[in-house]
Amino acid sequence: MRVQYSLSEEQLEESIAADHASKLAEWRQQVSEWEVDRSRPNPYEHKGGTLTIAAVRLELAKEDASDLLQGIRTNVHEDCSMSTFLSTGLELEELQCRLKRDKAEKGLHATDTQEARLIERSSSLQWRIDGWVKLQQLLLPMVTAERTKQAAEIDSMAGPPELFDLMLPSKVVANL
Image (cartoon, rainbow, N blue to C red):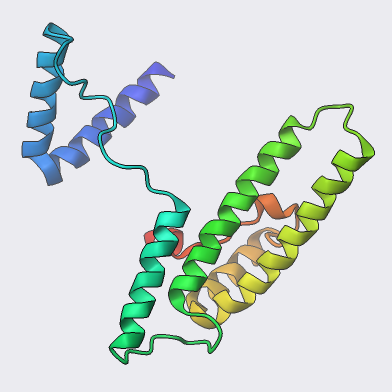
């Protein structure tokens, strides 16, 4: 396992060095200085702000509003802009994570009420995913082809909604 991590670290460093050599050298210098003098800023601590779904939604909504003011119409569907579609996808992904976590934490002796709430949330999430997939087919036709390909390999549509592959645009574009 240690060999695998070493290889992964080397590959990561090589890819970073290729694109950001000066930043990598600067960061290594900061690490060396911090290891000698711990009163210096810790280079391992995150210094940027936290990116939340709410912040992403706000930014996307601002872009939509700006486009509308400029007379730019980017909607493929009359009821849903691309930014609304994207933020809904992110929200569904978050709901999947929460449901998966809550099911894992439920324990062996869950009450009927707890079981019912999990089943209701699961059903609700499945309905929302079904609607989102229909919009996805309209907005991102290449995903339909990918889903068809996956369905031929495995039954990708079966299973609990928290494990359903949403094929968010960032993932689809990265895999093309």
